[in-house]
Image (cartoon, rainbow, N blue to C red; front, side):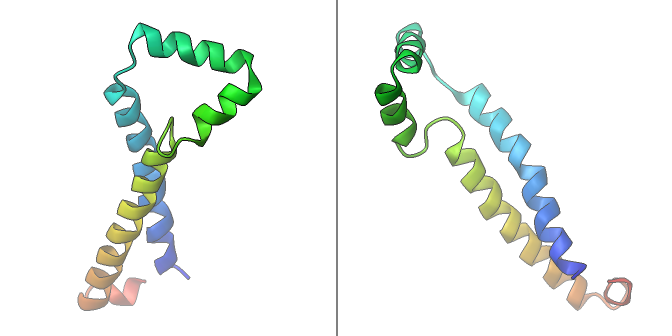
Length: 89
């Protein structure tokens, strides 16, 4: 039970980082921002915009889960192989 906490902690740590990098990396020009404003006025266009894969926050969430699980596995393996840390967990 305690070992699964590492998976959750790693995912929670990477999620805000992924969102920050997505915001910093967004190359939205004025036209795309105007398109997004127009999409919010019409629900059908908004649904089409949000249904595109990896738009907005989907990619950072997926990356946070993947990297979080990967580092959780690595952390769990390191704890199992360490004679000092294994009795603590």
